Image 1 (cartoon, one colour):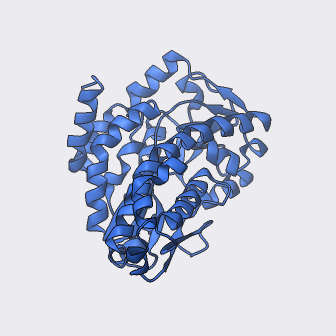
Image 2: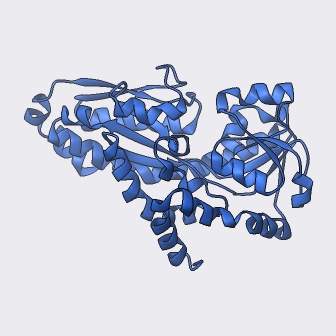
Length: 329
């Protein structure tokens, strides 16, 4: 982490006349995730290092748990309109405003974090254009760990999933679950535990990290390693706010974000391992997906890529470039 501060920070700290030219600014950073979530922990680490890198001129204050009043799907607009200077934005929740932000959620497009890194090579420039269009700049992007099907029953065939009522976070997951015979319900995270406790759903499509946040062991018995979808948090800053920061401090912050991002990706992989362990300690069982079942899941959902091209034409170029590099074209 110390190495992450790097030369940019040292240059600023070593030039008090530059830092002194900027009046200190306090920047609230809105996030819907609780203090215990690793994304929130990452944001707080970044804030701490940014304050050091700018000699105290930029003081980012992470406001966790949605305390600023903005819900997940509102975050991109909140930063765009200057209602909050910074936010940690979940990309797949912004598809109502920017449909291309849902690419990572296409089922089985990426099977691992390494695949996702290749996809991001083609997505990042597009996401940066989306951010600019919405009057903001991306500082860093960090994926959630892979997705699981958390269920009351153990399913080792696609037929065993038929008719199960399951909470899903977005349209892609909704279409996937419909394609494999489940009964999906699009429910915000804040309403998921209530849906489980009342029996409105008998399963949840989400990460192991969220499974721990929701104490799924109180409701469910199995989590299936389907690796079916991904999503990322994107920390952005309003461009009008950014312009009020001195050029030297802007550079220090951008350099810092670039250097810390790989460590934040590593924290995502570790969070998945730690959360999987916690779920099993709570009494749940991890179910590896049999090869035949995985092949059938992929077969039933493959048409969704072509359908996504029709719905979001701009997505075709980055997805096809990714598939060519992965030798899956």
